Image 1 (cartoon, rainbow, N blue to C red):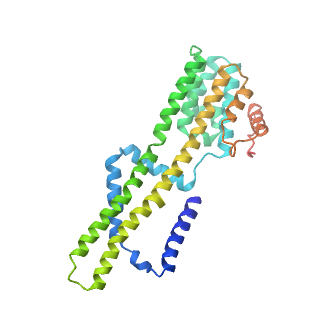
Image 2 (cartoon, rainbow, N blue to C red):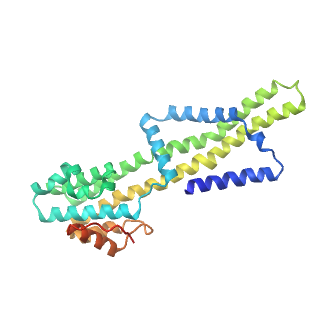
Image 3 (cartoon, helix red, strand yellow):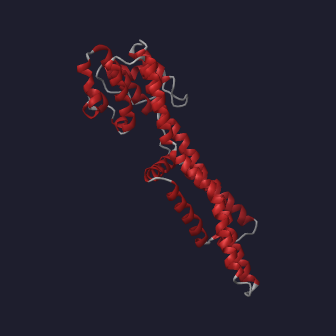
Length: 294
């Protein structure tokens, strides 16, 4: 919603101001200038990025437009799953709990939270480190170093679309100049025509410069920034898991370890300690998870 509102405001003020100054909006309708700019941008984008990054860019743009950042409910789900798993780790033998991590699709704990199960990377992250905990040989500082390294690797992969789109945004003004130069070349071939026709050709050429700059600073760069913000919030789920598991390995009770994780959640999305306690108690007693997050 914010994306649509912002784009409407930007276009409305820009075109409205231009029209108020006496400009003719039909002059800006130069489809071939946009074909040159957008086609060249798309081509260089494909050249510069592997197929996996190109696909992830499409996914990331969808997340940005639809504002797919984690909600308080998502954080509560992760905290509830971690609390239930830590209770199992604390009270049962290795053989009794390892089924949750070997096959989370059949685990009653994971299946109680279908939205979490959609985040396959996060589920795998939880299962991998819980396996290391039940093995019992790894030291806490070694696990912490490994967690930091994996989160850094995840950050690198998640921010590839940001870097790719920023590169496109940086190149768009130059490609706008390319489109303008091609338009001027076309205009120079019509010097023997009337001044009215020549002026129209030059105006059409300059639309290329305008389009390149606007698409760069008004569309592509803001989308890249929005993707960065959303994916930073998504990575908070992994940091939450990290802090919870480390607290548990250092001897904290499951409820206390979950509180360590809760403190890593940004303040605007952070559920209250009472909401987390009610959620985890409901899960541990077999009741329905609370659906309201504070």
